[in-house]
Length: 357
Picture 1 (cartoon, one colour):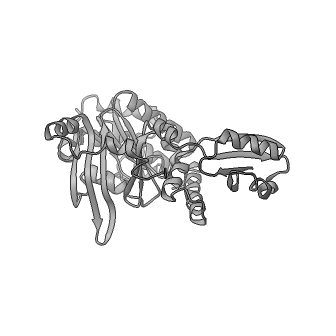
Picture 2: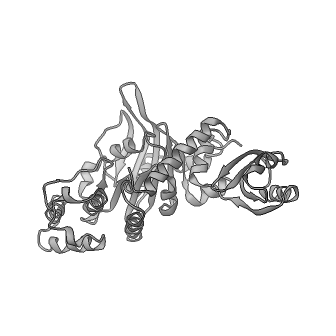
Picture 3: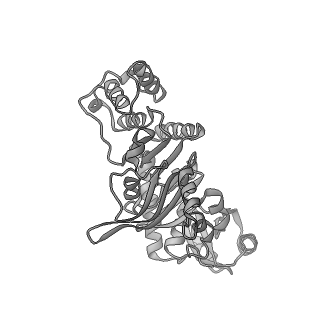
């Protein structure tokens, strides 16, 4: 069965298919969901940004929207936030018809960062807190507690424009959670952070989820979603191509790759490619990634590789979200386009690791 087809993805499409459900059941389902979308479409002129998106995000879950830049993740989030409105389809947020009706229960970190540059950090955060309905009494203490948690306690009297990009990012995260929202939406939250602050932000997001908050975040760096999420929404060219738990994704997408380190080094790739059951060999991080033919058992392939050539190391490579994404959008075909897509995704990951945006 081909990966990414309606048949192979039946399990997840059933969970978000509203057709055939009674109105009473649909209403109950919507009420229990932090976000629900049915058949949502959004265009900009002739460009279709989002097409036929169905979502059902339960309260208290942590969902990752993943896909390359320009896939439609931010457009989807902006429709959830009522910044944009769908051309057609149904949408509800925290049981209401729009985010506007639940705005004080939502925390939002947009992709385009926005702070009042001339305001001092402490004053800015207190202003945001008051806008979100927090009482002025004790608000200063709450702000200082948050600043201390993100290691910025000494900047509360500095102007926002005096902070580095990474510091501004942490201040904006505080602004999105200061009012203790039920739903937290973070669009590319790790952009601009160095590895140390990425880990800090991941721990803060995980803490919010542990407290029962619903967390939705988007990223084009897929390993970040693997580290945080229980559920993945994969979007490509405006369409949802995967909607499943991380555990079920790993179960359904069987490993078809083996990493080998032959005694003869990377120059052995042509010889390795001749082993029965091997369709493609690519150098990857000092080893050779061996892609197996459809239906080949990885354990049998490992025995064949060891019998054919002496090896320093042979191991099955568990499929990553990046592997799954490439498998879906290329229909499993190894080609120059697939390799370029992988290179683009890896380049994005590298920039994030270096704290660039």
